Image 1 (cartoon, rainbow, N blue to C red):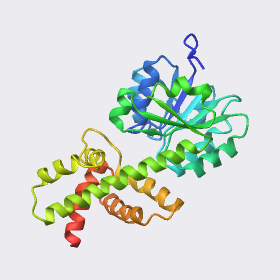
Image 2 (tube, rainbow, N blue to C red; image 1 turned 135 degrees about the vertical axis):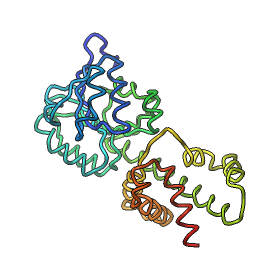
Image 3 (cartoon, rainbow, N blue to C red; image 1 turned 180 degrees about the horizontal axis):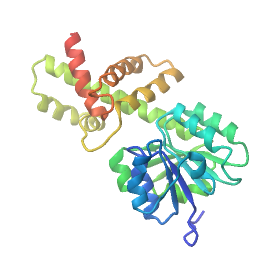
Image 4 (tube, one colour; image 1 turned 45 degrees about the vertical axis):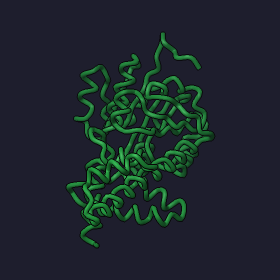
Length: 281
């Protein structure tokens, strides 16, 4: 479907965290009339200054929207917002669920939305730097034809199949990334125990098969909270028997329970894992 340049859709964006805010800016830059809502209203202020309208409640945000986008922290937050917006969504609206919640929650939302609303699951690959640049990878499940041009504002779109398949593939991708980052942390712990220079060990790992995980383990100026890593790995380990990832989950849970690392990017968890495993040894 071609972009409707003369009459851009009215979009409601719910969830203005580290990812949601730069994504909402992409829509403002494209000229879409944008209404925003966030549980902490102060986070909406920069977007309001840039031209968005702030809604006091989720229902107020979506009442007149053609497209509703939710980018929230997890299943509980999505279900809570769904309770608020489902009665207010207009017939024919598109709801794009972009949080990382797993396919079961997406299918649950699809049953609740029924036929009067088109639900698309479209979680993204990439962190805050990619969101700000409009270079995220969008994994779109379900009937995304009506919102494909909107999703493209965030970056390249991959059609993954039926509703829930985008959420399923995102869980697979995140499991690989988070497992790889934890493995890099343990490899660096081994390097420490063997008395190797940390920079030399890191450089050697970065030239090997885990190069991408090494880059993410030591990334700066991006943000994916360790506490969210716990949520994502738990979704995976509850879906299938993954013994290695269960051990990875214990790593992230320990890091998330530390006030110094829980809210911080997973690169901070790498330092925590190295310290914890070294102490245990």
